[in-house]
Length: 268
Image 1 (spheres, rainbow, N blue to C red):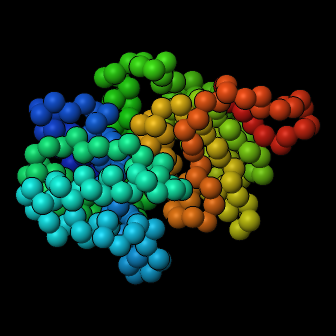
Image 2: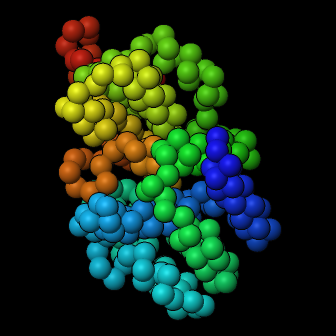
């Protein structure tokens, strides 16, 4: 990891410790990073060199946060979370039932202006963003074991299982109890590292269609969606259905999964 990358990771950790003194858990902190980083990166994609249409409605975007301070900032942030949580697609997944856990407007301003706004996150290598984010997720897993039947699979075990399954380009990878996306990310990395000559269509399929996760808890779905996004996986807008959804995988019969009927890999 480069010195710049290490500095970013250290800044994330240091501020997490500041907020923990106010009673925020690692999970609360990661959730707030999820929401704010998405808004920041969505804004970055509207700037050069991308110049893409904003996926966030006007009036609820990143500049409306950086232009406010004090109580008006905290009030507007809560309004953004409430309104974006009503939207569909990736916005709805990331912001559904979201709440502001940082009640001190000064600390919210510092997180927005000093930690997040000063970086161009879309320019950073996906591994830098992903490694920093996964570090916080792993720390949260150690801090709050289980809960709603959730247990975080150790990364070495995930890697061993993926190495045995050996997912291939063109296959659909489904994790019906995906948590924060560890199996899906490992499967994605395996296919990228072992298939260096993917064509344009294969790369598009791998980014938008190959991976699908189901999680029963909204808050964990949000973490998974942002984890995938920070690794460059899944749609930035409405170009395809979201990579992950909140649902109960055992609610209905998945159909005929006998060999040869579906070109898919299932992690269970």
